[in-house]
Length: 365
Image (cartoon, rainbow, N blue to C red; front, top):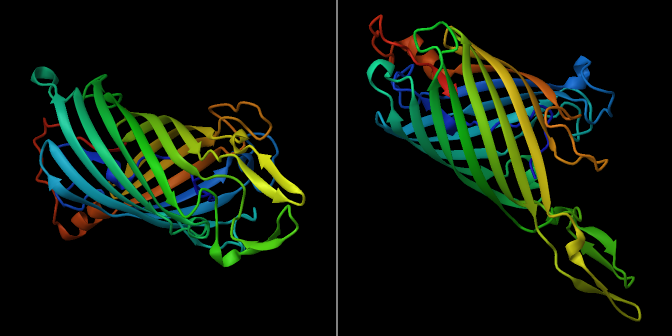
C-alpha cells in the first residue's frame, strides 16, 4: 500500500505528466523542472469536520524536487524523462515517526512519458480545440523507511492518457477561455520479497500451534496491495487571467493476494484452515479541487482541498466521496527552476510574440 505521510495528498500529476503547449515558456530541454514546498493539514485542525483521534489530525511539510528533461522535442511528438525526489516531516505529534519531527525520505519515482498531438482545430478557431494522447511509465523505488523496512523491491506502473481541450469564451477572453479534460488509466504492480510485509532484521520469536517457538520475519498478517488500477479524470479551467481552477476525481482499486488453504500441525494431528476468507479488493476514492496563481512566472501558488480515503471506513460504512476524516487542506509553493534560470541568464527565453498571438500557459495533468 502507499506510504502514510503527514502531508500526502492524492495527485496523479508528476513532472512526467507536465504537458506544454507549442508556445512553451522557455525553449530549454529541461523546462518543467520544479521544486515544490507543500504544506498540508487535516481539515479538523481548521475546524472543519468532527473531532477525531490525534493520529488523524496531522500537519506537515512535503518537499519535492522534480527534474524534467525532453529527450525528443518536436512540435507534435515529445518524449520526456523525469524523477520525483523528496522528503517529508510532520510538525504535529501523531506517532507516525519514531522521533518527533523526524524528516523521512519519500519513495523515489522515475518517470518516462511520450505524448503526441492527434488533432488541432484550424481556421477561425485555430488552437481552440485540441486532442492529445500520452503513454506514461513509472518506476517507484522503496527509498522511504516504511517501504525499505517492509521488503518492497520496486513498483512498475504503465498507463495511457487522453487530453481534450474545448473552447468556452476563446483565447482572447480574460477568463473561461477553455476547459481541458484529462482522462487517465494506470496499472501498477508491486514486486516484493513477500506478499506480506517482512523484515529480516526484525526476526521475532513466535509460538506455533504445536507449542514450538521459531523466529519469524513477518510483520503483519495482511497482504500488500500487489496490483493497483487507477482511473482518474481531471478538469482544468482558467477563471480570470492567470487565476485557474483544477478538480480531479479518482478511483484507486487495490488488489491483494489471496492466500490458499493449508494445514497447521498441532498436537494430535493437523488442523486445516481456509485462507480465502480475507478481503482481496480494497477500493479508494480521491477528490481534489484547487486554485492556482503564478507570481511573475517564476513561482506558482496552489491552494487546495484533497480527500483520499478507503471507500469503506473502519466502521463498515461507505464513506463520502468528497469528505472523510482523512481530508486535508494544502498549500503548494512551486519554484519553476527553468524559468528562474532563463530570467537570470537570458538563455532559453522565447522571442517576443506578435500582439495578436495567444500565449498558452503551462498546465499540470
